Length: 458
Ligand code: UTP
Image 1 (tube, helix red, strand yellow):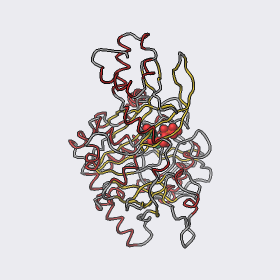
Image 2 (cartoon, helix red, strand yellow):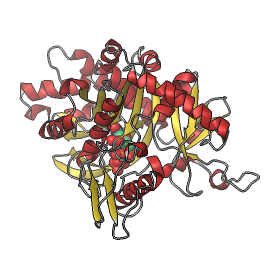
Image 3 (cartoon, rainbow, N blue to C red):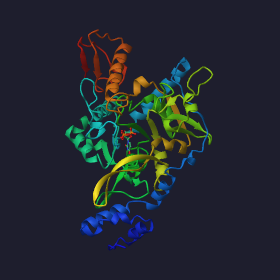
Image 4 (spheres, helix red, strand yellow):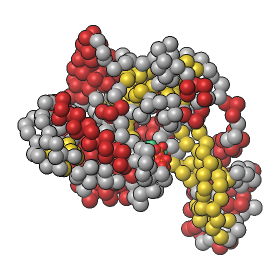
């Protein structure tokens, strides 16, 4: 057994769990490298990983039966519209009072997009070429101005893209936001395992790890000290969104209003699925009485195709990953150490160092999903939202849910907003982009637009 002063316990633990292959290069390491490897190993919960490995291919955990989740439909009656107006006014007051923070999760690896850099730096503006980060940042500036308030912006990165993200924000002068209202912090990491349940070396003195999923964001709010900071600022509501949706309404007063009025702990937006085969998770009511989200891959054919009496899809509420959390709720569920959200397992290719060289192996990656917090909440609400107004995911390089489709959706929404305001657009015009600094909602638009093929309204 190897030894190193001050690390007896961790070394014993590694041998006890038969993971001592991680010391394969021990004799070649200098003291600094040895300490670095042992520090890395100290941060790992080996017992938890053993349990995760033993359940990685266990299907018996899916123990609920499901019915469709109840939701608040998009208002179609005068009464419902009046409720929305009330919610809007409550929500606006909540924002004006400085009780809302924006929380962007941007720690993902963006493998499908294959972009060399943080996904948020990807240029999506159909005319301006603005990055996702810039679009989000300008929205936050616009909301702050509209409601004459400060909206702190939390950005969760990962170890892999943290420095680049900070640099991007610095280069772009925080997109006009004051730096003291923007917090950028990395999420936690968890080691991957090979198919034999063994830790994997990334290099001679560190383990191969991956970010612990967007579900790690709630724990990261605690470990980064953000919960205390938000409490100090008087924040009550955290508006969660993902980096790859340029259409997201980061601050939606109606949504916030319902969240406050209903004293909800987690509120979610849902959108009608485009059809049975759309690969999004759906909101469900579980047999334990809780609301949750069932991933597309966990739905049976029968569930995917199930229809109601009027022929509509039964499991119709797709998840666009837009949520509001009460800060108190996040504080409560993360206060006892690690938050007990389940880990989901994915098989992936990993570049591993073993037997003196690098090789591509296959292994397990463990991730938490933020929506698994929904069943923990005492009170949740689900609000139907219009997909064309709020959802344009940038997941792939081309084809479905790609930059092209997102730009097209942004363009269509610009046309829609102008039409809603009765502003005529020339037949010549093919592409319109509206800067969030010009209009954050259609009502902010007025005046004429030029008759050009491409228009950027800033
Ligand atoms: P996705 O699940 O789409 O993953 O993330 P991804 O990493 O962006 O892309 P792929 O799957 O590798 O192609 C949805 C949102 O959750 C964030 C992402 O940054 C994105 O905003 N996320 C995901 C994290 O913040 N951390 C994670 O560990 C995983």
